[in-house]
Image (cartoon, rainbow, N blue to C red; front, side):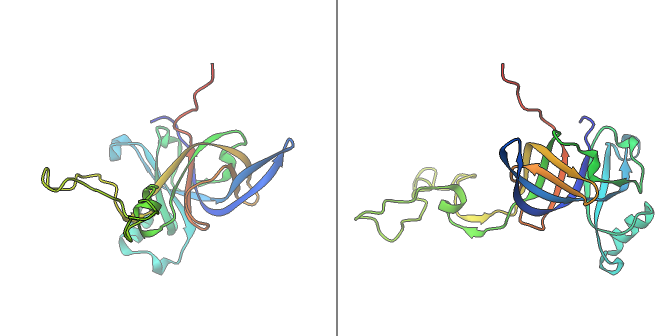
Amino acid sequence: MSDIKGILGEKLGMTQIFQDSRVIPVTVIQAGPCVVAQVKTKQSDGYDAVQLAFGATRARDVTKPMKGHFDKHEAEPARHLVELRTDDATTYTAGQELRVDMFQPGDRVDAVGVSKGRGFTGVMKRHGFAGLGASHGTQRKHRSPGSIGACATPSRVFKGMRMAGQSGSARITVLNLEVVQADPERSLLLVKGAIPGPPGGLVMVRSAVKTPARSA
């Protein structure tokens, strides 16, 4: 795990900006300020990480275990608490404030969020199945998955079979996005492209863990 920096924020939505006669689609994130609630080290916890607290909340809305955790590390109660693994955790201090100016235009970042929940969906919407034929001869099963296994051998459905079920509400990480703008005064971060989650959803923006391959 290399030295990785990150910040928590709230997805506001998408828009577009103009740069050098080009239209660039960007996602606007209300990022930070975040407070370092705890610093973990290999000596004390077995690994290096920092806990980032984001979002104001009332003290009565925090559970007793979480209130004790915040009090132990002398941090204000927050709505969200997310851990970021990094090798340079010792450079952080409890109570330190992190703002969007840690990222500069041109930086490569990863965006981590929870995708929109779609509820219980069929195989066509969930997995992109084509469905059955729409012509004569097909019963009222046009959106069904078709065969899911043999009846005699092995007489069961294999694990991992793509079927209908819960769709969305999953943790999604989009790699190697480009920071277009960073506005410390308004705590706004503009990232090129789309990121997972609905407007108002929690997003973590961190340093890219993989770099894009260079063309020969």
